[in-house]
Image (cartoon, rainbow over all chains, first blue to last red; front, side, top):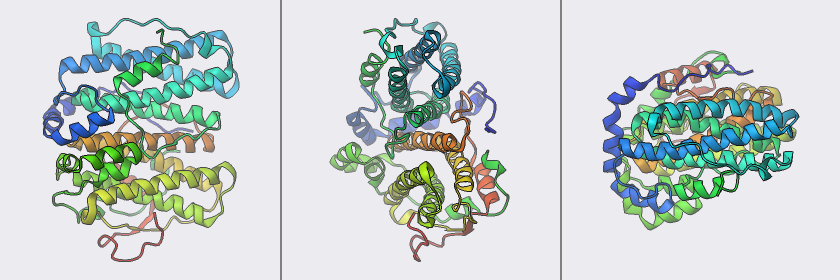
Length: 208
Length: 225
């Protein structure tokens, strides 16, 4: 079984992040040409060149929204009692991770954290099949959201996001494995812009 | 199974990287790495892409290239040995193709600055499902930690965006191999980075890399990884 490190709050390296803070910020400013590429890609909606604390709040709140939906979705499915076997094991493991991600983001945002949204989880938790489909979609959205937003935040927030996003990717591959899908369909995961994140969240439990 | 449980000896990844320094000028990375949609965008703005990649990122890219060489060669050998069966054989084929695409992406980007492919000896671990999966889990978990460990050093946002997208694909592979191996695909809420020193030590401990590359393509590779 796993020899992974025990879960730790991802702020252990805060000191080194801060000292390296200038590098990424400078890079972001210097990346002029790349911005056009990335923007055209949809990786970074309405990019201004430099990350900032204010921008971190906006972006971290988008990621917070993703985590809210994930936690609510898995809790609803588990409470509804529709899951068993592999799917239940998946849901129980993953919901614990998502709660940690949520708590981390809430703490990082403090009183800037958006309130919990409303959900519409009836359809996506109706059957094991509906759950599995929605879970696969939701985890892919999480990967795309973090990948799409992480380069726009300050270094400390970036490193925290990097520690979360690969776990979301593991969840995505896990549920795809259970469903007999291709766990890793692309050579490079596509970043999602805010619009796409919002649109897709509404198909998997975020109230419209 | 953790990467550091692999049996101990020696390759020097940094040594393999030592040959590469100078300015990075090629703009192919985004094109090659991301395929379709991204390729279109980058092709439309080659100057923008080129201007975006600072020389200092070359070192990081070459480091990633060595890890991709290692993975690609491993899966390619597994596929050619034809000893794997069932879902494991299918997974090796699929993941191998992706790792080879990553190698190509980094090589295209680095051009003549790309470090050469090391020589490998996988010591039979590609010849049974059990040994293969155990090693694959270790490699993929290692790759996730390695990319994460380097991310803060990347200066170009374009490179960083692509590297992040590759990083999560490695995490998907890790979860997939863990699933096939009967391990929990996602063991913790947070994945931790590893430093280059840690990664080098772990890779060295495997003894899978038997020779340092001399230069790019100065001889035929044993496997087209």
